[in-house]
Image (tube, rainbow, N blue to C red; front, side):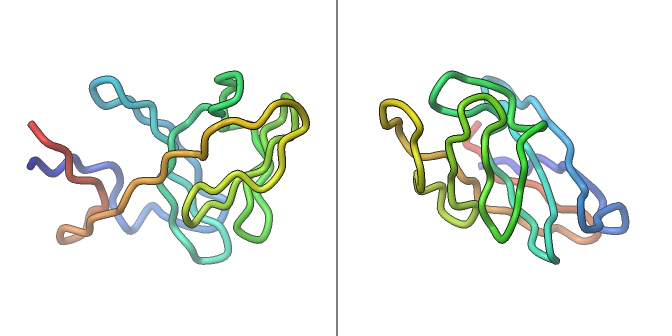
Length: 105
């Protein structure tokens, strides 16, 4: 396992959002109402970027077809068309003054 640092803790604040690409993963790190989330950065329905999605009360809504997912576990909460898989959610790892994730080499 290898630690991939994403951001320094001092830079995090509510409404923070930044996309990252690590190997084949496209990730979105975002903080809302004091909670930090790391999710895949595209909607699993039609792969629309989620950096333009609305986030409210722990729910992210894709701007394209309004699919909604729970930020905490990625559960699909609403599908306007055919259902799709849930959103991939990643565990955050804190190392000193940085936050990141652990991935297999």
